[in-house]
Amino acid sequence: MSDETLGHDQVLEQAARWVASGHGVALATVIETWGSAPRPVGSQLAIRDDSTFVGSVSGGCIEGDVVTRALDTLTSGKPEVLEYGVSDAKAWEVGLACGGRIRVFIEPVTN
Amino acid sequence: MRAELLTELLKAQSEKRAVASATRLSDGLQKLIYPTDKSEETWIFEATHEVLASDRSRIVVAPDGSEWFFNAFNPPLRLLVVGAVHIAQPVATMGTLAGYDVTIIDPREAFASPARFPDVTVRCEWPDEAMTALAPDARTAVVTLTHDPKLDDPALIVALNSPAFYIGSLGSKKTHAARLERLTAKGFDAQTLSRIHGPIGLSIGAKSPAEIAVSIMAQMTAVLRQ
Image (tube, rainbow over all chains, first blue to last red; front, side):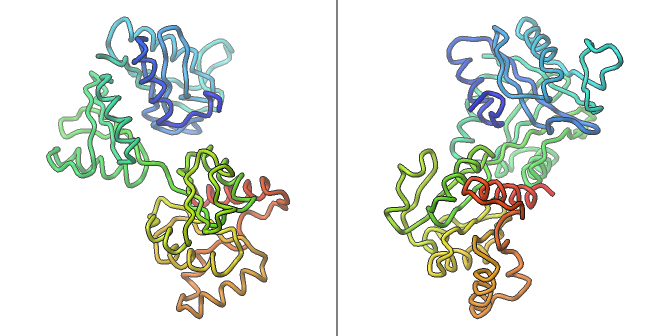
């Protein structure tokens, strides 16, 4: 089974295994969606301190940015709410091609 | 999330207990709430019940105006398959991939061997006994695949008397018509019997066991989500 198909609980299981092996780990969770969002509310992504990740919060459109911002929470120790909308003409800008809008909560796993 | 909360959440999941996490978005304050937890404030208790019953996680605004995210962690949906036949093998695999907790039921030892069904629960029991013990609920799908009345019918009777969200039964139109006649004679009315999807699966011209499993899983998904 590839990481992409991991369910809700399996993402958290992987996060717990990473924590147990001494890694810094952050979690990202879809908390609100508008329009045709690719993943439902509650979907999660677990991010390890070396940028390895499992799960998803979109169809791959914003994971790159979420991983970067999640790594920041490992340093700051503070959770954050991020909002993503439709990407504009600039193809490199982070956004959702599907036209939806989502809010993502990112938080470090702390001891 | 605190590591100890993560551990507790995973423990609840391994014990197949429903639980919700509640997170205050402004500062990440977080707790786990069980549906039986009456010590919580009323709005938290009600929000927990609502997200778990609907299986829809969402943001709830607290009486003090703060935003809280309630994430529902229900135990997996269950898929009970009667008949450890060839089609049951891809159904077990696809059901597991789709997140179901799959149980295969067949009293025939040659069929109900764990070697034929790795990674799922196999019960070598009579369907009525196994089904009664497993008590299908509204998060359970029941699929009968033996087309043998003495195995399928007792399982269907338990399923029809339960709130199972999906009931499907393999067999041709003729087989299904005969099945409905037998169940009518057992006292089930037409409306109740219309809960049985038969012939099972979406009509996509499926031929092989794996294709038939695709049609069954597609129909089950449609009933669940639409």
